[in-house]
Length: 421
Ligand code: GLU
Image (cartoon, rainbow, N blue to C red; front, top):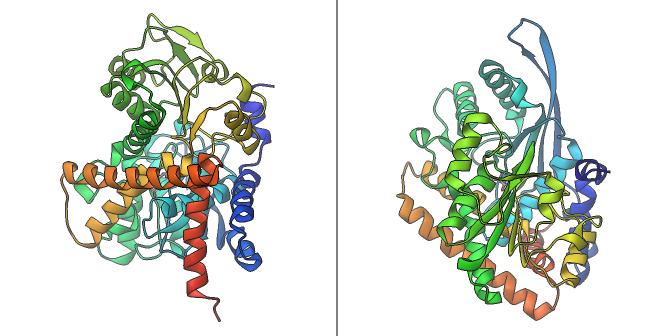
């Protein structure tokens, strides 16, 4: 079986619930609370028509799930991918709840997705799909209720269409309904780089903790979208050497290092990193097994599983993606002494700057990039240290520690609010 086939067989929702159960057991969580937090609050499935360029009507399926609203409005991205499923969106929504809690920003967790390969759509079709999907999920979203953002295969342009659609229906401009917008429409400075920047802040903290010199570190990045490509650029600026990267079509490897800026230009021109001159071609599965100091999975779920975890040769795994490692693989990596920076901490920089964007929108304010990055660093470093302290105290692992911090915060908020009615 290929990595893709293995990944497709593992249900991310079962993974998310298993991860939660481990933390709930350790926290001795009240049974009622456990039952509440183990399920999403709301799940919406929509089937909606789009008129394609050739005149025929196609019906697409999409989802918006709100996992928990205890600490604030639901927050989380919208994903466009051919493999989207309700269970995947439920998992991603639950992970958003813990992510917002671990960095202590006042949001609950939500996520959305549409089953579509956007690379097969024209710009006009993509816009029509986005506008109609926004209309369909409008029963849930709103600046005080549920705030979407970019995720896999969505970007600032898609957010601009969502914001415009919502605003047209309300008769006035509502910038706070989505984050990750273009700067000209109330987007935040630094949001585009925020996920990767947060990941790099975490890696710097981990390297310091482990006594690893980043100047000598070799880095492998799986996924070359928003998180992966920018993480590769930012980690290079810290002195590390990126020796291999990949995207959905395959990867490239050079033991002496790859020129990341040239790779970004290559991908922008050709749509893939494959064929990059002077580098050896590798598959996504081979890429994960390359010996390195820092491995950054920045693509999709279920990439590191019990089938390949014993062949991961990294000192640090920094999860810029959501859900790249299964619980079985987690155990193997932990036993092998690999330091894990779990997704809900490692990629929380994106939603943190989304929070800044939302605050700026609500206040009709605009902060400089320097202010955004300073505040981001403060939040990421504090969260990392809280999780590390919990890890050292509980003698668990970094994922369990992040869950202990996050689940406790959500449980406290839920218990304090009490049950209605
Ligand atoms: N899609 C990103 C994530 O998984 C960002 C979510 C947001 O900014 O709301 O964290």
